[in-house]
View 1 (cartoon, rainbow over the protein chains, first blue to last red):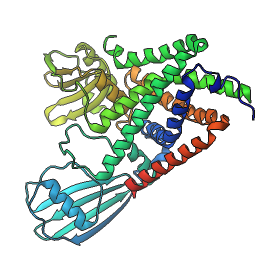
View 2 (view 1 turned 120 degrees about the vertical axis):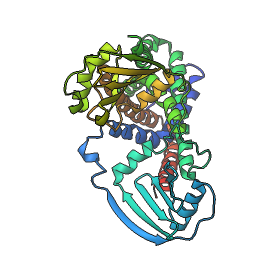
View 3 (view 1 turned 135 degrees about the vertical axis):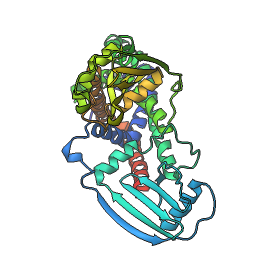
View 4 (view 1 turned 90 degrees about the horizontal axis):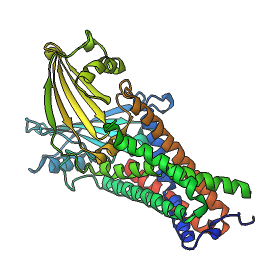
Length: 217
Length: 207
């Protein structure tokens, strides 16, 4: 195959290296970008029949004896109980029960929700497991990391959710870098500036309208 | 193949430029949503009351977009515009609580259907909050209510368009890279390492 006309080798000095970096980031993040783009589409069209997950959920229940828990904070006791039950995942926010003999909480991970109801006095715990299909899994991967603004558990989140959140931060940073470096490279292409300004201005105007302009219309 | 490369490259450039502000909005707001923190969201609200409102009969019995549509007259009298994001009826007290959102501004109203009065609370959390709101809009909840304001129906198209153009850009990126023979080996290695990272993470989170 011959070299395509107008390839990176014909770009102004300094931008060819940028193109390589940009392509590298794009190729590395390809699957992450596809996941978040496609699941974003699914979330915005939750009525699409082929991607339903809630009606086909499967629920299983089991009951198990539990050992007495040592005193501690609610989250310490929840984690101790999770270890006993062999469950891992993100603890959903819960309110402390008025009854000290009860400990009820939810554990979530993409595609699966555990509802635990423990009777500490009787030494028994009931666990209901709700499992979703693949569409449920991918949707939850998109929203799983969203922290609640009223969540006060500093550093007490599930390890894997922190890893996932870090990965998502990296994807966001990668996308922002790709956008900014693209702008730099485009500006170096003098013959593409006029049409490029038009395309960029159109996108920018629409964004500004929705971010700020609607309040003043 | 030269013409295909040139067309792909130009389309990649111009669609990328058009979509770049949207991608920045989604990327920045993603960080806010991941960490549950939005700058400026703690600004103090302003409160006011209004009386003698033109509350349509049977408002309580409506639901979804019909209820939002019926509320428009009342909201205009209150000088409130925007997407009706939430309606919560409290029948026993003959009250209707609503949340009306324009990106960057949130107005909650407590309508008393018996006394035809309302308490209005307005917050202006600003542009960062607007980004987070737009990121989550239209979203997966309240499908029968959302899109009741013209501009949010346009945003729905823009959000879908952003996804489609991002998919196009990623595919055209792969094509433009594949044309460059000198970069193929490192590109393949990056795709493979990206796939391994992605699948490994997903497996660890889901399994």
